[in-house]
Image (cartoon, rainbow, N blue to C red; front, top):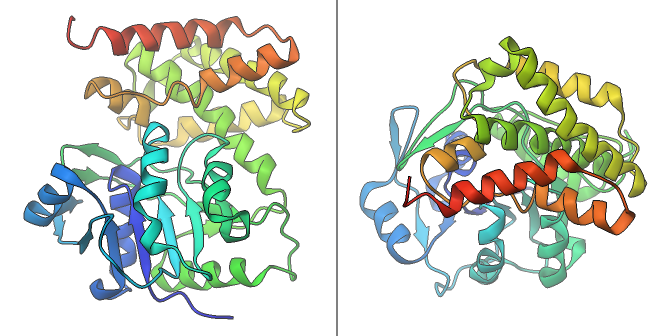
Length: 311
């Protein structure tokens, strides 16, 4: 098993910057490459990125820069930036590169794998983080952890790729787990986001409101219940207990923390509503399932985006 020495990352938002800052405590800067282009790249080169009050001057590489392939490539962009990001990291992908995606939703691995090969992809996501990004500054109390792995992961029989990433996470202090059924776990996080991200974005409320408001919890539950119905049609066995567990997780997060979609709305950025409610609605249409809550949330959030410069 080859150890992971070099790491490339695209997407220095809240998740990307927080996790890369943690990685840089154990990995030399010369083995870290951040892929960025245009004004963003120049800003990072000039000002760096601040994480919990410390400025990190990560090495910045443009898409045209020739580099040796990364041992590990991390995607941490928003879903609507993924097609461009896939092209911009081309020089960082080699025969033995392992690719993981921190993106929300259930489709990024397939999109990346369609270009670079599913044999390079490990499924992953981030859970229980409260990282927040304002400008080029990220702050967090809880970094969270990274569930990752192949489609199926049998304890004692992990693939060499899984073992390599596990060794790397142990070395860098990134918390993780390796679910036996990775696709179900990916859908579980998707279901959580369908409820939490969309409802908090519309109501402009923090995690504390989920804990303290019965009405907010009920609305989250209704949105997630529709995602469960779609999951069953897609042969993913989510259920009512999963919804309860997700509500418990959300209620345990830092009370003044904000979901990524709420942060996007407050900063008047494009949201990932297509990856959340949009996906629920399209799959519901495919299977003839009624999803009125998600339809309404998609309409509300789309309207918010279209009126950023008016209101």
